[in-house]
Image: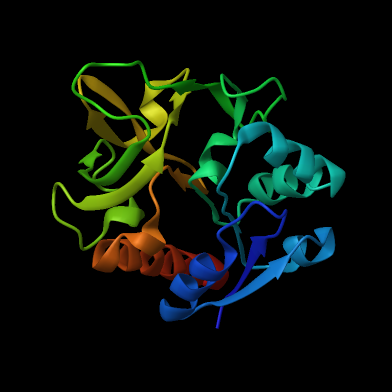
Length: 211
């Protein structure tokens, strides 16, 4: 089985993320060890909570460099929910610098009369990179489960792998570039669609290991 490092920084939905990866046939290892992250076949950065405390936790555990090194190595890397937002340069939610892997800022939804914030519940994905491996075996407009008040706004919109519309606002739902992918929604809460996405990630890891 492929070994996937699930980064532990006390802000992650670790149990549910690991369960989904196990169902997809991987062996997840919850860790904050730079050595174990470097040795893994792939890396997952999950997360729930606020931007600043998350970045403070990553820095206190000296995880910035291992994360950058993992992405630079070319191994598959997956961010989930807050794990997507931390990849950006910063967030309107706080003042801490982000990881800076993705150029752009995490922004707050604008208030509208007919929408609630946070954006919570099931919504349709618009696949802007429909051929990406994450979406293999899914329909054109799969449903996913969201819980968020902030969203990543990349400088280069071409990095968007999927968008979602809440009220009149169409925002980033997933990003993908080279070996890096991340999603704002919760695959572990997205029923068969979410499990299929995690299975697609594990299949990509297996392919990368064989190359």
